[in-house]
Length: 362
Ligand SMILES: *Cc1c(COP(=O)(O)O)cnc(C)c1O
Image 1: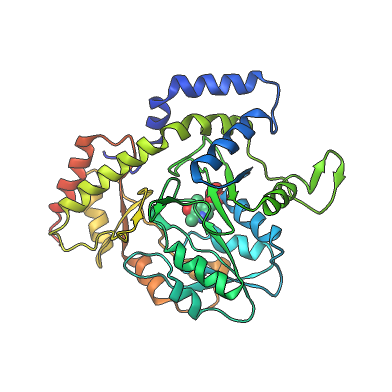
Image 2 (image 1 turned 90 degrees about the vertical axis):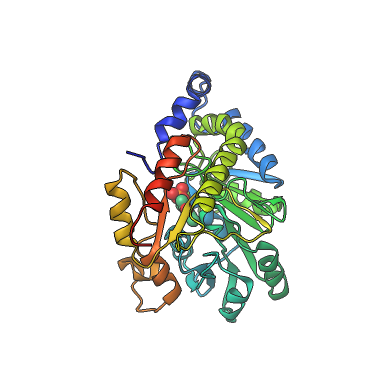
């Protein structure tokens, strides 16, 4: 069996370092905040090129805290991709605003500035592009559009740790970028975690305040905040893993390159990142009109695949509005994610390639 992603291997690869970091954190006597958290925040800010990093509880909270800190709420519209993971939409709903779906470019699966512009109304306050599957959306065009229209840009970078657009790391182009450290992400904790990066010191301070009970000083509450903080044990683990992120992303890139080479003649629709993007291959997503048969075939060959995502947010019971979004619906019917991960062996990659190229349906 070739697993889709084997998280245990990423622990095994760094076991002594991670065990030492966890032991140090547990022995420190600081179980909320403290040096493990600030150490990771500083390192991750430096890594992304942003001036500030604020650790939070998870990736959903990260988006929601930015929206709250920007004063976005009831009566406001926020543009979100139609084909994203539902967290992007939920964050907008939780702050009382309305998520307005924008269809992606069917080749890159990412929203474009033109697509966003067509969805603007007088109520639009913010744009949330998602760097889906680890491939950056055209962030310079999106930031230019937002600048011209007086809108905020929040980058949902939950799948894009280390990705670059025109050579420049994602994490500081918009007003803020939001991160998830869910275990399966390229930089994953061994539990939940998240962060916001931003160049704006006032926004950073406001997010920190909101995520810590609206309190800048113990028992002094300036606003009605929430409890959403990065756990120090997770921060210690993330600091260990951050030092390996570039090497692990490079390994993902090698696997993606092997797939793309091997499948060139198959007739499958392959990922097609823009030339100016350096994706980090959180996922390697194919498209095939008969996805179910391809998935069954691969499963029979011992290859585990997943679907990101089988049902777009507007078709979920949580959002069933009757909206028709044909690109999101077609992608949901056709996408298939192949195994990819930094600890995949060369022979596993070969097995995936042999199984896909032997598929009789393409
Ligand atoms: C994983 C993910 C999130 C949510 O992150 P959590 O840490 O699970 O809350 C948000 N947006 C996207 C695009 C994601 O992939």
